[in-house]
Length: 101
Image 1: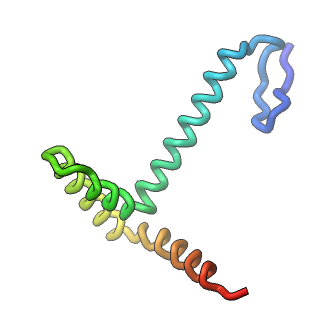
Image 2: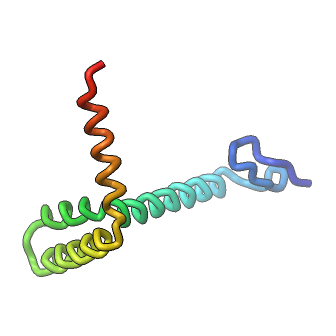
């Protein structure tokens, strides 16, 4: 017999079938999935942040390749107009911060 889980995910599981270890692994998978989505969104809409991060890496041959790749990625995202979204949001927050209440 199955019953809906009490949490907001509404998973259906067999009675007493999910052990603590299995539930922990499910939570880890959920967290990793969330982090991958966040990284994906940051890579698209805040590509300038990756260039800043890459330029702060210690200088060596590998970091030079990372900087070049980050610059190319940022240029592509800028050409597609995707970085303007992050700039608009950043500008809105700065305006809100400077607002006198």
